[in-house]
Length: 346
Ligand SMILES: [Fe+2]
Ligand SMILES: [Fe+2]
Image (cartoon, rainbow, N blue to C red; front, side, top):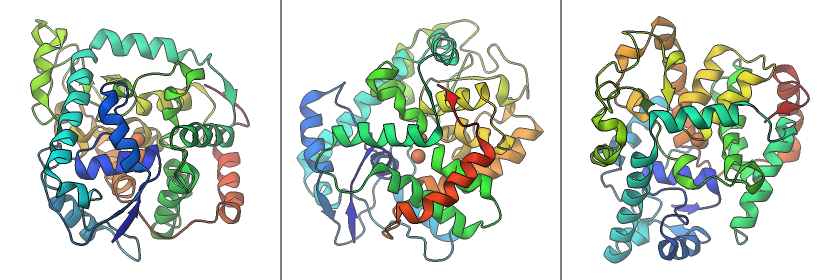
């Protein structure tokens, strides 16, 4: 099969499949050069290649998962997108080293104090005022600049996920819109939003203020995180109480939490499950490994069901069906008008 590797959101999906971080230029510039040239080409995968993913869960498991739960014509990738490069052992080890380096930096720096500081800083929503569609265009333009050779805009990728969910869940219009907007927090990478480095924008997220669960990818690097040896923050409950609800939990800083803050700080009329999905879609320890149940309340358990549904479309949004943006835009504009104010503070 052929995958066209396009932009940030695609790269994130690839990362989930193949343990490849969406971009690592800040951390390892020499690797990034190779990656960018790889990202700009069409990768031909003649046969499925299965390997361990970064979560210690095999790609095969995820694929089986996808096949059971997804219906219709939705395309579930049946092979690793970096097919050719997997047969190139030099590139493969570079790729793994890049992933590990990404998580090493992430795990050392994501402390309880850091996440709270970022939340406070960005939670003021003083960076910009714009509509949802303007943000989509900003992300599009920005990602275009970083990948000039790529031929499909980011917006098509977002719409592919949304359209796939729309086809399978036609009555849940809020879920269609949630798919469209869930990654908009990646504008944090944009210079006008502070040009945050990759390690605190993308990648898996996890709770801070309590012990790091062993199911978190590359858990070993938490040993260098100051919270790891803290007498309170290193305990099972840390600063929390049993079943306090995820709403009370400080999660590591990234595009998920930022978009959640934007939604919370504006008059957004989406249901609680949409907020939950946006906030926790990269919290793999929760929705894949079932960790941190002791922090969840009954409401979280209900909403987790929607997150699990959503996550399959986030992972497997590699539908080769092109979406005609102009054709579907009126539908999504009607949803944006229904659930969001005209302008939002970012
Ligand atoms: Fe995301
Ligand atoms: Fe995503």
